[in-house]
Image (cartoon, rainbow, N blue to C red; front, side, top):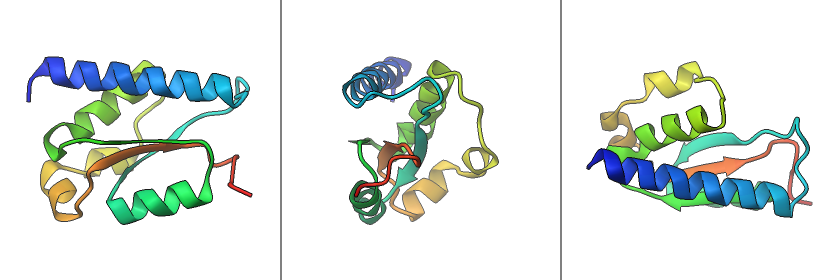
Length: 107
């Protein structure tokens, strides 16, 4: 995968997050949490939180896009992020990047 693909995916994802935050009246202290998720995990997150932003992407760019998105939002990396590698992503069938706000459970 090219750097350009990662950059395009990152920009589109950040654009979606910005729009969702505006639409749903996020405050300054409302932050997105991110999860690299399997399809089953994505469904669970979307069932429990609103709004969410889920994008399917290949395992070869998932981690890089997550890191770029976090950098774009000026969020720090968590230890979980650094322990995941491409092999884990493929083995766990993680093919979605899902953003949600833990303060906004679906009611």
